[in-house]
Amino acid sequence: MGEGFRDKARKIYKDVPIEEASLNTFIGLIELQSDISKSFSAKFANLDKERIREALGAGRPAVEVVDLQLSEEELGTALTRISGYLKEELSDARDSLTRIEEAQRSGQLSVLELGQAFLQGDVGKARAAAWKLEVDQEMLEALVAWVMQSVFQALSESVAEQVGFEGWSSGRCPVCGAFTRVEIEEPAGGTLLHCQFCGAEWRYSPARCPFCGNEDESSLRVFALEEDERFGVGVCRQCRNYWKIIYEGKAGADVPRRLYDIWTIKLDLLVSGR
Image 1 (tube, rainbow, N blue to C red):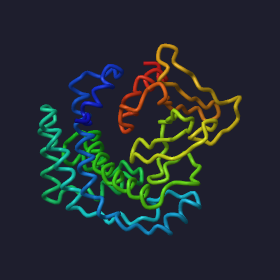
Image 2 (cartoon, rainbow, N blue to C red):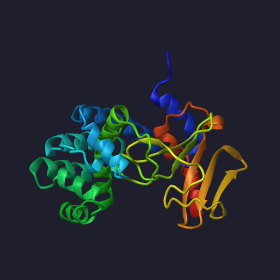
Image 3 (tube, helix red, strand yellow):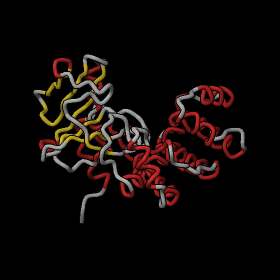
Image 4 (cartoon, one colour):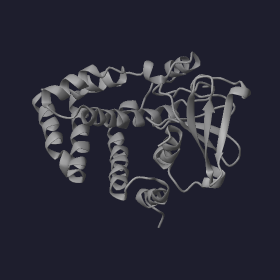
């Protein structure tokens, strides 16, 4: 019998400087999101492939030409499932999570509106809603982000299957348009970028900054970790951004890629000086 997701996830615990209980909660959330994303898959079963190809060819992410067809009811259901799980795991957050659920059910809070604001980078709506409900703004924003992430995971899988990302050369995600800090060096020598939000993966030049596109070797550096050859850090002196590198030839392929971001959190802490 093959290993389950949680068994594979266990392999990163020793590398992640987070207490086990919190990691267990996070892994459970990822599992739940994966299940929720399946409920959105049917929406993207028949994408307008030509329109998406045209957008990608013009350097525009797929989300700009895809009608997400989202409804308050389905987003509310997703929010309730995530909130319900977190109430079981985080006893000190139960009252606030219940308040958010009740506000959504009564129409006081619209996950659809907050989700659209999230995609536009508008934090004002979440701030106002959190103030009105007397709940923590970061908690509300996280709930909405996790709901929308489930939607985009479904979209990402559908675009990858129906269209693919051949020819996409940007460091931005070809599906959601976000930048990513996760680079994968495959055992055979290929380089991939992995979107931290929707999970899309696409080919990329290893000698190019994924944030600004800088290809000047004198201002690009890759730092290997002497104590751990599985990981490295890329740094661009031009835009002052960094990204994390996983060398799968040394790290192996046992850990699901959706865990690479949390698996390498010690690199984020290293760069930030913490």
